[in-house]
Every structure is written in structure tokens, then in C-alpha cells.
Picture 1 (cartoon, helix red, strand yellow):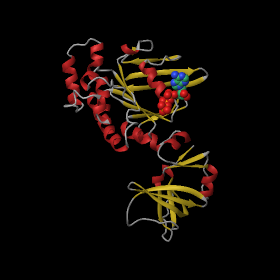
Picture 2 (cartoon, protein in one colour):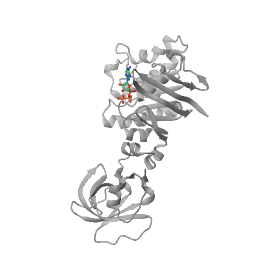
Picture 3 (tube, rainbow, N blue to C red):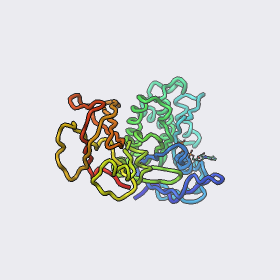
Picture 4 (cartoon, protein in one colour):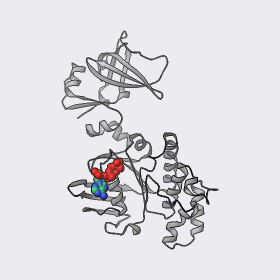
Length: 337
Ligand SMILES: Nc1ncnc2c1ncn2[C@@H]1O[C@H](COP(=O)(O)OP(=O)(O)OP(=O)(O)O)[C@@H](O)[C@H]1O
């Protein structure tokens, strides 16, 4: 049963159609990510759910209740922005308590203290935002939202202002907090790796449309079209003509072929490639080798077509520039559009 339902939501600014009949649904406790390039409508969709943008068409329901025309403050939806927007002149304690005070809630002290403990902010109660690290500020921003016990949490690129190392830690922490609270969450990012790490479900957006949704693994291994393949997983994307230039004996019907870099096998050109009907084979030459973390990326010329292949770094099994190689590609791992 879906908990948050977005049903054919559209929004234009003047002539610019920013959301085009967008539909998505989340189960309770699900972590979904909107992934797409700058300007594709991610923030507008999030702001529509929060009620900060008035939609032209469509409906939004949470927990069976239609909130399409409900005032933002009565939607029971928490939102954390990239900039956190903490009150600079208030302490951590007052920042977290603010929403509860506004809503004239009871047991404010107890709720705030519990949140401080859960967010590992003990000892920072009387600090001001400028006295906190980026990660601590982010946790205060989360605490300020979560203390109101929202039904849905919306996170608009909450990690993008942080440097790579802190960001990695906070990705894990955010996921832990989300699991602990079992809170239905929509996260916005344009970083595909971040989306893969964090999400139960990814929605890929392009120009106001959802172009594919699925688990990270589904999207990674079965992109629905070449836009998704380009956007995710560093695919080799070849026109059918280029493919036939590279693999000469195969008749393939389609327009484009997408090949993930890690499914391209390489052996030394002097060795015999075992005959396997499930694989395409060809001869190639290594043009370039680079290291990305513990991965070796090979640029290979195969009959005049450039391929990149990623292999885990292994000292005894490396090729160098100019080496002749045999290339094998598992047919079932390739996607034809
Ligand atoms: N208030 C507004 N008035 C007019 N146009 C707007 C307004 N808000 C957003 N837009 C336009 O809508 C489009 C989508 O913007 P949106 O902020 O939703 O994109 P995004 O995917 O979140 O991008 P980013 O990753 O850069 O934040 C953009 O072309 C933007 O210029």
C-alpha cells in the first residue's frame, strides 16, 4: 500500500513546463531519490509536495489524506534544504525547539532533549550555528524537522555543500537516522553515486518527466533508454553502426548498444580466447590506462571504436599502453535500444 502518492502533477512557469504529469508513489518508510540534471524539476517537485509551490494540476495524498490544497504548515511534511537555513541567532536547543513552540506543543523540553541525544549533539545545546561543523549543522537541521514528527521528510540536496569525505560519512548517518525513524523520505541529488548508495528507489528525471524508476540495481543494469544509460554507470554507448564496425559478425537490430565498463573482459593478445557463444569477441589495442581509486580504467581501440573498460586493480594482471588484447563482452550484459 502506498503511503505518499503523487498523481499526475504538472507545473509551468509562464511557457516553461517544469513538471509534466509526474506520478510517483512511496511505501511507508521508503527512501526514494529524485536524480536528474540541474533544472530538470527536482526542487519544484519537492516544493510542490511541501506546498511551497502551487501546482497547476494533479493530486498529492499522504497516508490516505488528500493534501493538495492543504496549507504548507498543516501538511505534516518536513523539509531540509541544502543551506540548512538554521536561525543564526538561536542556539542549537532553540533551533530544534522552534517549530514545537510555534505549534504550542507540550513536552517540548523532553522532545528536544531526546532529539539531541539521537543526533549525537550532546554538549552542543548552547552553541550557535556558526560554532558548529557542517555535519553538526546538518544534524541540527534534521533534528529541527524530525522533532515535529512529520509524516514525510523531504531533503533537497542536503549534502551538496559538504566536502567529499564528510559527505560520505553523512550519507551513512542520514540513512541510519532515516531507518531508525522509519520515515518516508524523498531525497534530491544530481550525484548518481549518492543516489545509488542511499536509495530504496530511484526516480530519474529529465525535463519535467520521470524517465525511469526502480531499485538502484535495476536502473544500473537495465537502463530504459540511452538518456538513463548516459546518466548512470558510465556506460559505453555506441550507435548500431559503430557496434557493427567493432563486432563484425553479429547482426543486431536496434539503434544503440550500451555496454557497462566492468563487463568488458580483456586477455593478452597472444592468448587464445575460449570460444563462448554467449560472448562477442574482438581484437583491440590499449590506448591509455588510468587509476580511479582501486579501479583501472582502460581506453581500448577495437577496430577503430573507442571503448572504456573498468577492472579492479590487480598487480599481476595489468595491461599497459600499446598492448594488444583480446576483448570479450557478455551478450546478456549489454542493453540494446
Ligand atoms: N519561481 C520560479 N519562476 C520561474 N521559473 C522557475 C521558478 N522556479 C524554478 N523555475 C524553473 O523551473 C525549472 C526547474 O527548476 P528546479 O529548481 O525544479 O530544477 P532542479 O532540477 O531542482 O535543478 P537544480 O539541480 O539546479 O536545483 C528551471 O528551468 C527553473 O529555471
